[in-house]
Structures are given as C-alpha cells and as structure tokens.
Length: 234
Image 1 (tube, rainbow, N blue to C red):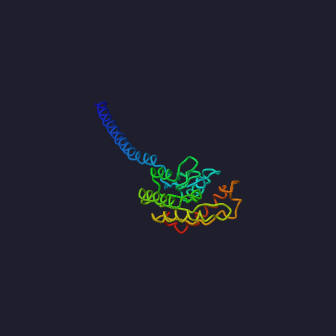
Image 2 (tube, rainbow, N blue to C red; image 1 turned 60 degrees about the vertical axis):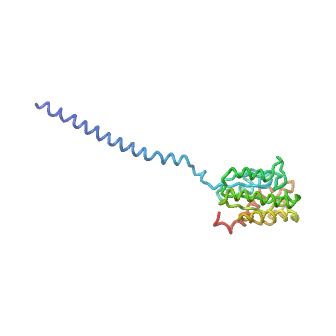
Image 3 (spheres, rainbow, N blue to C red; image 1 turned 30 degrees about the vertical axis):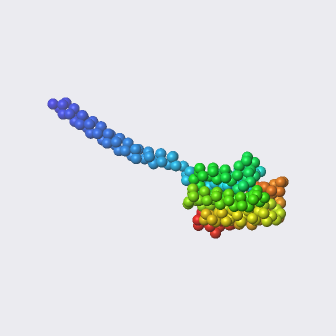
C-alpha cells in the first residue's frame, strides 16, 4: 500500500505540469501573433516612402546639364526640404520649344500626371524666348490648369528663367510674365529669382549658358531665399 499512493500523485503532478506548459505556450503564441503584424507593417512602409514627393518640369538647367544628377537646383531644393524628387526636365525644351528628344513641357506634364506629387516645380525657360507669345501663353495656361485639376492640393512653385552672366534680354522677361500669370492663375507661387548668375562667369560652364555645380548652388540658394516667406506652407 505504501507503493501505490505515490504512484497516484505522479500522474496528477505531470498533468498539472503539462497544463501549465500548454497555457504558457498558448500565451507566448498569442504574444507572437500580436507582435507579428506590427513588424510586418514596419517592413511594408519604410521611412523613405513617407517623404513628400515632388516633380520638376523644366529645361537643361533644371535637368542639370553638365553636372551630377544630385547637383541640379531642383535636386538641391528637394534635398533641403526632404522631398523625393522625380526630375522630368529635358534639355532644350520649353512650353512650345521642342527639346533634344523632340518633346516639350507637354510631355513632361503628361509624365507628371501619372505620379502623385505634393510639390510641383516648374521653370520658365530661355528656350521659349523666340517663340510666339500667344502659343506660349496658351500652352502655359493649359498645362498649369491640367496640373491643378489633377492635383488640387499640390503646392505648385514656378520660377523665372535662368540667364547667364550678361543682362537677360527683354524676350525672357516676356516669358517670365506669361508663366508667372499661369502659375498664379492656379493659386501657385511664382518666384522671381532676379539674375543670380549675372556678372558671375565663374558660375557658368564653358558654354556660357549652363551653370556649373557652384552656379546650380547659387540658383538653389536664390530659390530658397524666395521660398523663405512660404516656409509655413512647405
């Protein structure tokens, strides 16, 4: 009889132990199941994708001809504000003037319409200075209207055309006036940069037209200076 009673207790203790382990395992599994979606969510939405998106529409200067892709003024401005930039600019192009690949701002806007920019940078250009002003006006009004209709909450920022070290011609001022009216007409901000490169040939490449890296920084600095009063909206 002394040998039978201890044997009766062992299965009970073993059952209790197994039950306790089962409860603990279930609790741990529940914690793991709860934590897993959080980790998955973090992996699915990396911080880089949360940066506001921006597009740049412009000419060879906005494209950054002759400098690195991260040295153009749109790239520098985007970096300053933490925007993720799609630089759509094409050398030689304008609202009417076709660029090296036969495209105009029309094609750049078509590409922008497929994106979801929070900021739209658009540059008046010296390339349109010899074009029919009526045609430039019509194109600028139409394209800015399409951008605003598609992106009603986007911040549209236009800038005046960039000239070289000599005084800019009246024909470029005429283009600036046309583009400025179109940008303001859709509640955008049009920045008059003045002449950041005038009298500074050292900021230009050997062609006397395109800013070098230092010249691009000078343009970006002027953009930032004009954006300063709008900082609360950026």
